[in-house]
Structures are given as C-alpha cells and as structure tokens.
Image (cartoon, rainbow, N blue to C red; front, side):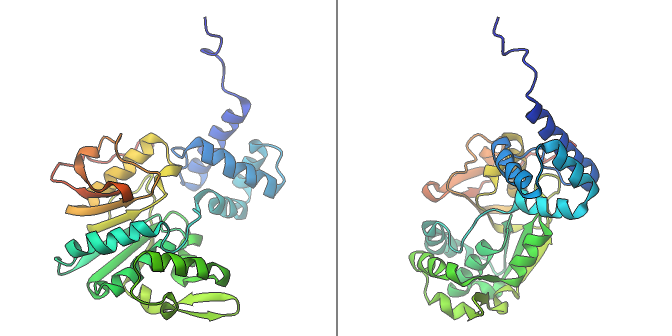
Length: 289
C-alpha cells in the first residue's frame, strides 16, 4: 500500500488553511481559492516582515491587529505590472479589436483586477489615441482599497517611465507617452483627464457578481493567482458581463481552454490571448461559501 495515501497534511498546510479561514470569517475576504504556491511565497515574505516564526503566529496578529491585516492584504493582492505590459497585446487591441469597437455608439470596458492602475492608463491612452475615449466608460475594479487609491492617483516612480515609454512605442502608440504625464519630485503624475471617464470600485472575483455590461473585459495576470475552481468562476463572470461578440483579454500565461465556460468564447487572437464572446449561454455563476 502506498504510504502517502493516508498521510496527514503537513502542519504548515493546516496552518495555512486555518489562516485563510480566519481571514474569511473575521474580515470577509476570501483567499481560500487562491493558488497555494503563490500564497506560500507571499505569506513567507509576510512572516519575515512581521517577525513571525509560523503562520499560526501571523494568524494571531491578523485577528487582533487590523493594521496587520491591511498590510497583509497588500502582500496577497498586488500584482506586479507595468504600462503597456506585453506590447503585442495592446497592438492587437489597437489594430484588430478597436475596428470592431468603433461600430458601437457607446462602450464599456471592465479592467478586472486593476491593481495600481497601469493597465487602465494603458487602455485609456490607447482609446484616446484611437478616438474612442469620449464614448467609453472604464470600470476599474480590485479587491484592495489601497490599490484602488494608487490607481486613481495615477502616480508612478519616474525611473519606471522609460520602460513604460518603450512599451507604449512598441504597442503602436501614436504620440509620445510624455504627452500624458507631468514629471515632478521623482514621480510621474498622469493627466487626471485620463480618468475622467473611469469608475474605481471594490469588486471581489471570489464572491461578487456581475455589476455592468461590457464590450471589452481586460483581466491580465489575475487568474494565475487562482486555483482552477476560482478561475472558472471568474471566467463565468467575464462571460456573463460581456455583450454578445464582446472581447476578453487574458494574460500571456492564462487560458480558458479547460474552463466549463470555454464554449462561451471563441479564439480571436490566440497568440495574444484575446477571445470573443459567442452566443452560447453562460452558466449562472454561484459561490459556495
């Protein structure tokens, strides 16, 4: 008999499950469906930061000190991003998706998991350059209030701008990125007019439901932090929010191939992970608490 069949879970796994359950019960944020590998890495850094020898000690702090949980939220939810990340994706939007979007008198774009706002500003600049800004409303959502504050502020370290500028050029940018920000005191402040048609709101892909109809959903490098069940739920939300023939953009390492909602999408630009909503019915998205 295989000795591993009835082997009990390691103490660290038990501690992880208890910590996630405690966060859910006490703060109503649900990380139980997040990929375990990513959680282990991020929580290990949190343990070091707070001087905790174990996840049990971290759980004690989280339950008794809300300020610790606020810091932990940042560690668990913020994705590393950049403006016009993977320029070929934004070039594909510009050259292949925008011509279809131009056929609509008004547009709604959902940036799901917007983090610190780099993807939103990339899309806002692209839509301005393509003459679609005035007919578009952007919904920028994230689970983290701190991330949303940073996204709405639109302030980034000046030493990141050179890379942003190169990405913008490679994406087919029709102007200079410097047209959209002011540099001061070591930071680049992006023009507030770019967010004049943006709505920033908390939204949890784990437990919340569809809140708006969209013509484009761009959610890149978010699903990689979820387990398969939660990925499936998020894809169901995206499908339910899209108009028929609307577009979904995912990250370069993400796929909907194995999702129960895959029939609701067709390949549009497989190389850049852009899909199009079909007429197939999207299964109702439920959440098991």
